[in-house]
Structure formats: structure tokens, C-alpha cells
Image (tube, rainbow, N blue to C red; front, side):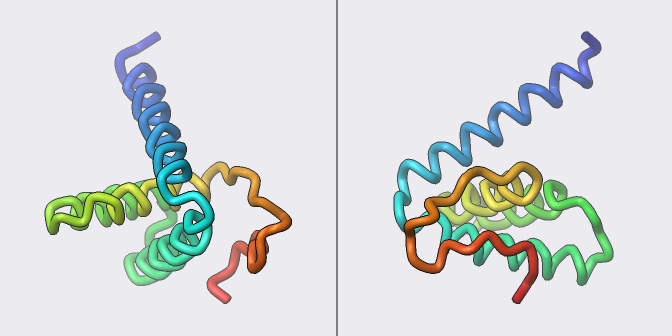
Length: 103
């Protein structure tokens, strides 16, 4: 396996770990907060003309972390992971509709 592929696998693993950590820490607050970051990522994608959720999220997370907003930084990354490979939502939770629009 070449170095680039190995780095990609390691990064994906870290992103999934971040998503799992944020889900565990926030519990029922996870989806409402992730939904807000997904909307922010979509808006930034539209504004920049980018189609790369992860690129936008990494830039956003970096700015948030530098400003001292660690949890928000992780939320931005978790939101991007959810956009790329969604996890299951609890269907019994109120307001938990899996929408892919800004609506």
C-alpha cells in the first residue's frame, strides 16, 4: 500500500473516531447540532463553489479550533462524515428526519 493510501485510511479512521466521540458526548443533542453544521457546510460549499464537504469542514474545524471552540470543531468534522457516510438516526426521537436539503 502506498503512503498516500495509508494516510487516507488513517485520516478516515480519525474522522470516524471523532464522530463517535461527539455522538457519545452529546447524546440526544448530537443530531440537532450536527444538522446545524451540515447546513453551514452546505452554505460554505455554495459560496465557494466547492463540492468537497470534507475540505470545507476541515477548514471550518481549523478556524473553530484556533478560536478555542474545540467541540464545535469536532462537530464540523462529524457533520462532514455524516454527509459523506450517514449513520443511523433514532427514528423515535422527535424531529429526527433524515433530510439532505437546506430546508
